Amino acid sequence: MGTTDWRTVNPSGDRRVVVTKELPGDRWLQLLTRAGYRVDVCTSSRILGPEEIAAALQPGCVAAIGQLTESWDAALLATLKQAGGVMYSNYAVGFDNVDVAAASALGLPVGNTPGVLTETTAELAVALTLAVARRIAEGDRYMREGRFNGWLPTLLLGELLYRKTLGIIGAGRTGTTYARMLVEGHKMDLVYYDVLPNEALEDYLADYGGFLEAHGEQPVHCRRAESIEDLLRAADVVSLHAVLDASTQHLIDAARLAQMKEHAVLINASRGPLIDEAALVEHCRAHPHFRAGLDVYEDEPALKPGLAELDNVVLVPHLGSATSWTRENMAALAATNVVAVLNGWPVWDGPDVRPFLADPSPQAAPSILNAEILNLPTVTDTSIDDRALRRRTA
Ligand code: DGY
Image 1 (cartoon, helix red, strand yellow):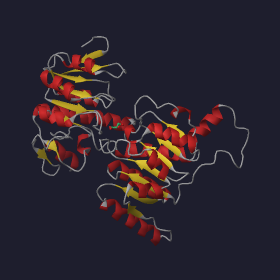
Image 2 (cartoon, helix red, strand yellow):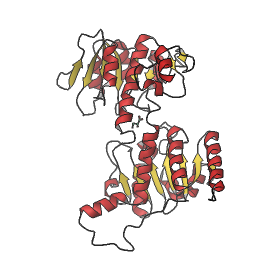
Image 3 (cartoon, helix red, strand yellow):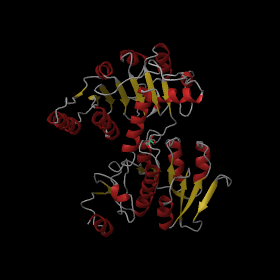
Image 4 (cartoon, protein in one colour):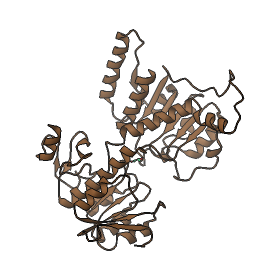
């Protein structure tokens, strides 16, 4: 481990935890140091390469908290194991950067941080949707360039969302939350594509439609699309909320872009490789009324040539979870996963992670992705016998 880009907290700690980036807030560090660990934190904002991380793990690292920008592949996980590591904790809910199968084969639990990004990421996707539809970034540039010479009937006309059709691909936590924000806020009809039906969402929106009717308004409608093409043809706004794996790589390619409406809006706040970005550049060039809002990129942090020159695209730097509340709680969950595994505590199987967001939190690991395959014991929030939890929820 090089000395310049690292700081050590609690140097006399009995076991060593490596954290590959500074994390927001201080609760995560308190959780680790109160448990008696020495914590080595990389202070550089540079994305670390595998050799640098491997060097930092040696000698005697029992657990690492790593980033979605790092590839925790079989080789790096094996290095962690060989250094004495017993678990890896990802500072993210997404885990396409981790070879979970390799970790399982090595007997290493892999933690992630679900439950505290949902609304935050959905709000960012809504912000992008509105920014794209109403040309906010173009308007901002227009003002700063001193081009505003007075109101004009034809200046920067965008798209109205109210009562249009929203399409989401992936109706999990974030997709559903984003959809509800736009359906309830802008009375959009919803068409969703997911391998599984989301009956809870369908029931909720049927009830919401009934509520609107009871108040003399038109109801909203929700249906599950028969195919991605069916959704793309129907929707005025399409937002991607699928996980990245081999089946979703380039889910939106040139052929599918061609299925979308001429004035459609495409939003991606999940993972960049879901879109064939070069095809998107071509499509946006050829279709000036088509608009896209991107939070994530195929070759992140690099952009495909031409993307940054397009006026009909809004770009932000992977900000989906970027609020202090979310990032601090992600850090606390990542640290709690470490403390729990090192202490042999069970894995939380409750409906949400809120009990972990303040001290004292349950003696459990908030989220271990391969708990089942590693046969780790689980505990639910109703079965846990934890005085602190009972005190707080009383
Ligand atoms: C995650 O946690 O997977 C997000 O992409 C971070 O914003």
